[in-house]
Amino acid sequence: MVRTIVLKLPVKSFSCNIKLVVVQESKKFTPDDVYEEIYYLLSKCIRSVNSVNSAASFVEVILTRSEKLMIGKRVAIAFLLRKGAKYDEVCYILRVSRGTVARVNDRLENSLDFQKHIDRILRQEEIDLALLNFFEKLAKLGSIGKGGSAWRQVSRNLSTEKQKKLISKV
Image 1 (cartoon, helix red, strand yellow):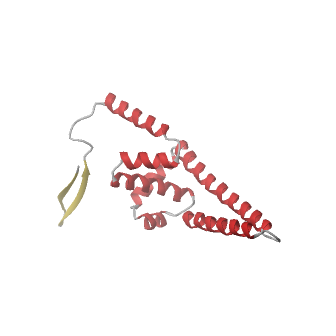
Image 2 (cartoon, rainbow, N blue to C red):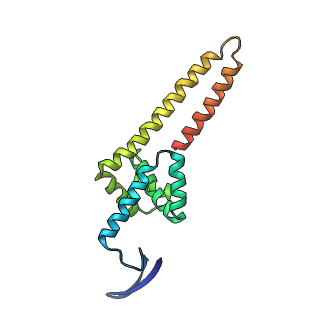
């Protein structure tokens, strides 16, 4: 549940209105031991996911659109920061505040596990691109001479795949 509260604060010679958006976790209090059990169960569910398709399906079922967007933006902020993007660039690209970028950056800097997960995916992207380059060159070699039309088609397909990967990196 989301509520908006407007505070009227008198500040010396003028008054100002501050608009606060309050997100309420639940109307009912959750005891700490129950919260820990729920968190552990969620962690186990996430750990059991073993493929990108399975993860996408899990996220689609369990999270609302706004939750997916909020979490997805945080992950995207971390990726952009690890790739060397500046705060203002991240804010512009993802339409987030500097405060959000700062919080994600702080968590990223203070969590080696978070860095490790992000860096592992970034390394895999680089490996995938290097393999595409290698196979593209190999296919071009095979397309020389008689019977090379199949290799030329493979080369074209690899070039298309490489372009898709490069575009998704931006």
